[in-house]
Every structure is written in C-alpha cells, then in structure tokens.
Length: 218
Image: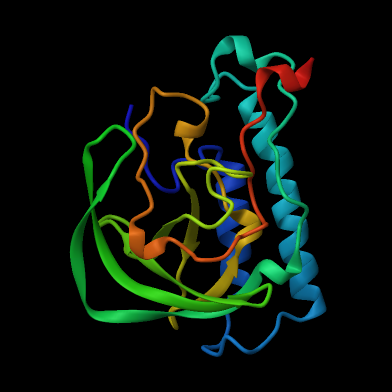
C-alpha cells in the first residue's frame, strides 16, 4: 500500500491543527529571530494536542495498526517537548526545481521535485535539509530526514516533517512535530526513505520515537 506525505496525518482535525499553527507562526526571513513567548506556547499546545488526537486515531478503525494491536494501544512514544528544537527559518528556493527519484521502503522509486533547502540551528547544531514537493501540492513541502537517533531511539527508516509555505517562504521548523511513516507500524505500506542529502550529522532528540512494542502494554 502506497503512502504519501501529509496523508500520514490522515485525521482532518489533526492535519488542520498542524497546518494552521505553522501558517500562523510564519514571519520574516531571518532565522535569528526567536519565537516570542506566546508563539512558543501556541506551538507547544498545538503539538501536544495533536499527539493526543493522533493516539485516538491509532485506536480507531482507520489506524495503520492491525486490529489486534488497537485494543489497549498504549499511545505513541515521543521525546519530551523541547523548545531548543524549534527554529524560525525560510526556504532557500531553487530557481528551477529539480526532478528527482526518491527510493521507498519497498524498493520502488517515488517522483518529487527538489525545490530548495532550509538552513537552521537547533540545540547548538547547525544543519541543512532539502525540501521536496509533488506537482499537486505546490504550497506544501515534504522533508524526510535521518539523524543520529535513527535506528536507535527513533525509527530506522527515518522520520518526516510536513510544512506549508507562506507567500514569503518563511515558517517555523519544529522538530517536535517529526513523525514516523506508516511503515513503522505495518509492512503493508510503501514509504519514502530519506535521501543521503537529508541525513543530519547530529541527533534530533525531538518528535516521535520508536513505535511502542505490543509487550509495552502488558
């Protein structure tokens, strides 16, 4: 079963919450301007509410989990929310988006456009991540990434971020929103694998962790 960016957030309530908050906080091109206290609290509240909604979704009939795993599902695992992994940044857009093929977990290839990159600083580390999009989602960018937690405290197939660009291409890059592809929960799905250009050399101790094992609910 094929899986797509943003469709991982399958519940409309959760999707709208994530997109509206990102849009509301977008401002300025400078990555050196910190979020003010109200913006920090808004972002944190939205993220934590989204986690609660996602747990309810995972217990529903639309869940990627097998029926046997839904009853008594303990909830997804996350790092504690950390403001050090929230950065205001902007897309450095390519003059001509590049057509690329991204491998998937099942060995197939998925077509995307590389549209630009984000440079950021989080928790004392500087990084760069490339942004991709499909023809149908011109205002949305998909960021699959791996970091030094990948395969240890986070899913071995990497994690994702979904962002909506405003007119100035600026936004808040919040790694507390990083999430696992559906492949982390079922082998029925085919999920994009982060390209090498999006492998960070430092850990991102934020966002979703390894999926809970069935024994964790015992």
